[in-house]
Image 1: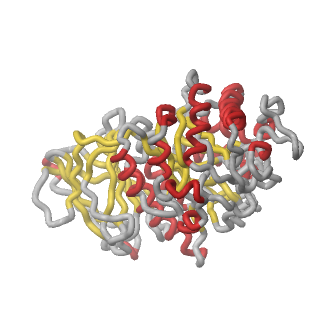
Image 2: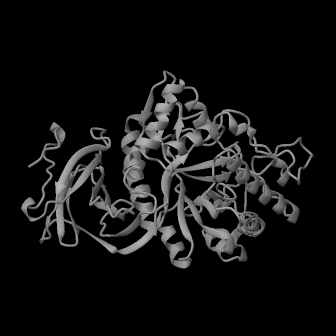
Image 3: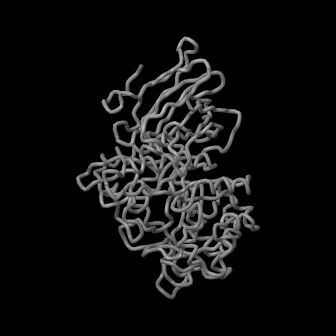
Length: 489
């Protein structure tokens, strides 16, 4: 019998079948909602011979394969860069090492221009005085990013060479839009504007490459059905306009390795967005990805990107079943401060474990990406938008850096599931809408090692058995915990 080592958890027992049957073991890491364990290395559990068991049995079948994984990470927003640069250089470097070398984050979704998380006026890379235009993009410049954002991206790539970067605009330049503002409006319905916006995005890819940062993915618009952003850059981009831009952008990127992803919004359309749908967009309600992938522009679209703020991850499986040749990516979800801040770690760990870490990956997502990499203790700085969003880490005014629940939830994947890993079949009992059972997801890495990530939805300890082939072990998961098991390296 092996105790978990605290009075509150002494009843949690790691129970393996007789070790004499087989010498192989699975290594175990645990994070618990009470914070007693935070990516704690709890040693190994030994495999025994497969046998009948009264426990819920997670059966892993490596021969039944699903999606190939790309990466896990967050976004170095203007706000993230600003708070990281408030740290002394040594402390900032240590934080970057912790995120990209220790936690092994390997995916960054970068705003193209300003988002709602910035500590300065909104901007794009081609701003001109009101009433002027710049179809030739003579004023295009990424100079803004050279002081903080690009150095951090290059450092992240140095720390984790497998890093991939995605670019997403919150708004085109105001001169391309119907309202002449970065906030709200939509693209002017003009072939010249569609060409100019496509060229703007292509120039971003080229400019970043010249700065040593390759852009692996592009989307056209963050949350294209959010037509009334609260004081921050945003835009309505119906699927028919997205298709017109992609028809221009696809050929411009044909010599690049950059993939175009569609949509970049919620699993299902938020009721507030649906209620404000213009007459020419009603067909997009809860059907935007399908509408876009049914156009001629789909030949340039590699896959579809999703967010977490409305709906359920099962929407991604629905789309996959309709368009199995197109990949699925999950590209944004922010943690949120709870009404009682003392519960934030616990609430975030449980919700993200259920919906993002296991729910997304079991529904075909190749990536799991949070929102801000770093914020300050006031959940900022930000312009409009979310006032309760939390970062992967918090950089406090006294110079201390706190790892939040997102650091650990992402780490339970990023530290162990390598790029190129394949999700494989595994029995799972829990559900994203919570039924109190254990839910899980399994992977096989390119080196042949196996990874099982399991979340106990129940606040009480639960024991499960895990079987692969003719080998089996049992383990008791602490209440609410997230666990990663790795074997056969």
